[in-house]
Structures are given as C-alpha cells and as structure tokens.
Amino acid sequence: MARCQGRVVGYALTMRVNRSPYERPLAWIEAVGGLDLRNHDSQGEWMYGIDFVVDPTYRQRGIGTQLYQVRFALIRRLNLRGFYAGGMLRNYSHYAHCMTPVQYAEKVIQREVEDPTVTMQMNRGFAALGVIESYVKADNHPAMLIAWHNAAFRAARPAPVQRRVAEAQPALG
Image (tube, rainbow, N blue to C red):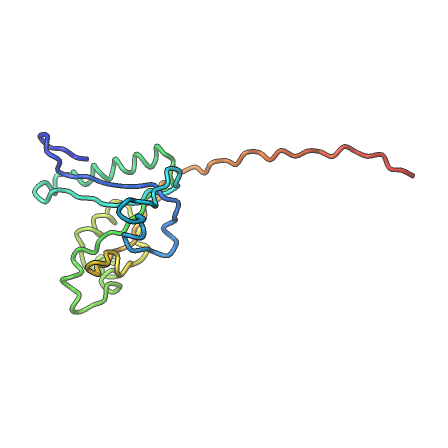
C-alpha cells in the first residue's frame, strides 16, 4: 500500500499460486478462484497479480514503480519463480472498431501502439505471453498475459535418496 500524507494513494494485491503462466490462460475470476481467492496457495511457486491501483491524481510520481519494486523484492525474498497477471489492455476500446484484441496486442508488443497498462508493464521487464480475450467477463474486456521471471530463483534441491546396499549373499554351489 502506498500512502501520501496519511492518504492511501495506491495498492498492489497479490496471491501465491502453483499454476504456471504457461498453462491455458484463465479469466480473472477463475484465476483468483472467486472473490474469496480460493486459488491462493501459501506454498505456491508463483505470485499472481490480483489488482493494482494508483490514484489518477498521484500518477507519474513513481508510486507504481515503487509498488512493483516491493512486489519483485518480495518474490526474490520468498524465492518464487516469478510473477504473472493479466495486464488490462486499457486502450483497446479506442481500437475495437478496427482490430481484434489479438491484433491490438500485437501492435502493443511491437511498440506501434502504446497501451497505458501493458506498455508500462513491459517497460518494467514483463514479457507478453498472449491475450486473454475475455479477462473480465462482465464487460468482455481483454488483457495481456504478462510474466516476470525471478532471475535469482533457485530450485530447492531434492533430499538425497537413501539407498540401502544389499548385503552380498554368498553363492551356494
């Protein structure tokens, strides 16, 4: 949560999941497991972005950057594989009359069109993995599936396998 003079001006809400960003993308409500966040797994290897907001009157002051830096630091500290989310294609509605969500997303990826959400996320090191056409089903709003990989992630070493050596049996002759 970000505060300025005692007032909340931004927040980032996340949860741990075991679902990989390389599995079939889900709409937001399915990804989080409903409004009670049933898909949170305290032992999950990935962080999933539930919501992210900065008060419009406080944008362009580095608050969003600081919130992302805190998320990334937490992921490193917990030794998670990374972070992923559906980045809302906020400006798609301006282009919906002339292109599909996938076409719009391609133009964002190629940097031919700037999207206020996804372009910012790509500038922070997120990779665009694909489009979720009905990410928010209520208004059929598309999103870009984005992922950030923790370069410091170290897979846990499995416990050594205990092997019993069979005692040699004398050959009977």
